[in-house]
Image (cartoon, rainbow, N blue to C red; front, side, top):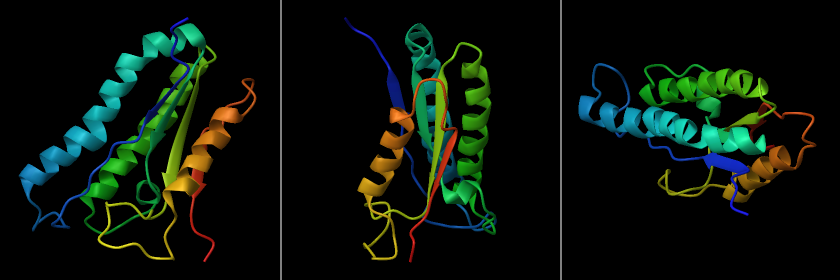
Length: 150
């Protein structure tokens, strides 16, 4: 049987010029397309299928979406992701669906110039996602805030 039980909206991008005054509006547009619009489109397209299975939508925000970072356009896009995830969780609760927002700190991925031992590994984020998925269907892990211990 074809069915959709879980969707993980994990795409994201940053910008090369931080700050509002020195920022590049073309980069902002790309960031909004990926960090905001792609998230919205993923949810819109998945919802009818997840409603049928009482499924689970998981999205990636960031620690930057929960903390203030002077002039960070990237951080503002992750604030959107964080707020949207919470609002979507409320919407999905109406039909016993689940929504989890994953908020990792810096992760050793190609997003950053070089790996560092003080960053999370991608496997740490994957474990957080699996933790949310494996929760008993009667509860919803609404958020996982994930930071390194060192």
